[in-house]
Amino acid sequence: MVEIKQVTTKKELSAFVQFYYDLYRDNDCAVPFLYFDEMDTLNRQKNPSFDYCEADYFLAYQDGKVVGRIAAIINHHANERWNTLQVRFGWFDFIDDQEVSDALLKAVEGWGRERGMTEMVGPMGFIDTDREGMLVEGFEKLASMYINYNQSYYPEHIQRFGGFEKSNDWVEARVRVPEVVPDKFAKVTEMVRRRYNLRAHKFSRHELMNEGKAHEIFDVLNATYKDLYGFCQLSDRQIDKLVRDYIKIADLNLVTGVVDGNANDKLVGFGITFPSFSRALQKTHDGRLFPFGWWHLLKILKWHKTDVVDLLLIGVLPEYRAKGANGLIFDDLIRWFQRYGFKWAETGPMMETNDGVLSQWQYLDSKIHRRHRCFKKNL
Image (cartoon, rainbow, N blue to C red):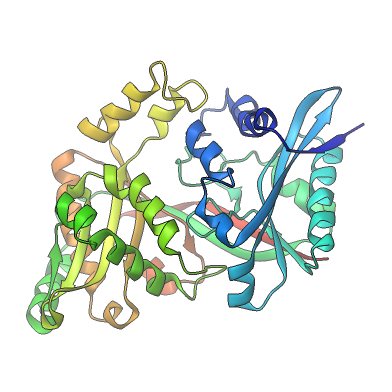
């Protein structure tokens, strides 16, 4: 017998977050997310997404023990942008028991119908920078802190539930950092500099945090991602949070901008990368920084004690893509990857239909090795 209970207390919210750690503690491919970050994301008072989102969380119990979890989310701005009435499900994890997964999905179905929704989609978060998609290929590959990891039985449960169809796929690639910058990048870089007066730009901390350049980065992101699946524009408060969470602590050698010298050095593109925290997070106690988790993360952040770098966010304004601005980003970042001794780069999720993004890896030794899927169901 499965009991579904809506999360209403901080203790229950902690149990909601804790379930993932308990379920995947002995899995060498899963990466525990930072506990405080998960709690803050799900907190109505701390997550600015609640300015235009509503959500509730549900736990599944068997014999008094937590055996599953799911979040029900409505992003009203995204629904307006895409002219839909969608309820999203996210943070969807469960033991290998169809009765459990069915009960969780039915909880979101009912919650969505009560609020007038006509479609159910997921896994998705509040916004596009949250983790999206269910892993359907690459279960044997190490995950990152920026993507969902799940066992192979998850998509089987979705199919058996009935009514769901594929809505969107994202793929991720593993890229070998070349020992020498490919001639293609070098030639494109030189051509772009001469023909269009574009150049790579390295930011100072003061420039980003005190002169508004960090906000300009996310303005470019808003313009770059505006037509991507499920995206809605980031608000100023959401940008402020992303700046605090990522830009403030980033190694700025691993962040590159592109500016247009013909337009008063207007920012037209960016690349944000971080050394991989995957193995370091696995050494924490359930994503906690204390007592010793902070030390494992600091070794990565400060001394780059990993041979993998994560390509977190890359964006180029539409009118500059054909001008080769992305080549400037890669030309600069690859040189820094080489200096830091990174051997591999892990891309973030890329839509399988985005040929422009996928084609940029053809000049490097790369292989798609994971796939995440978003499912959709009519209510």
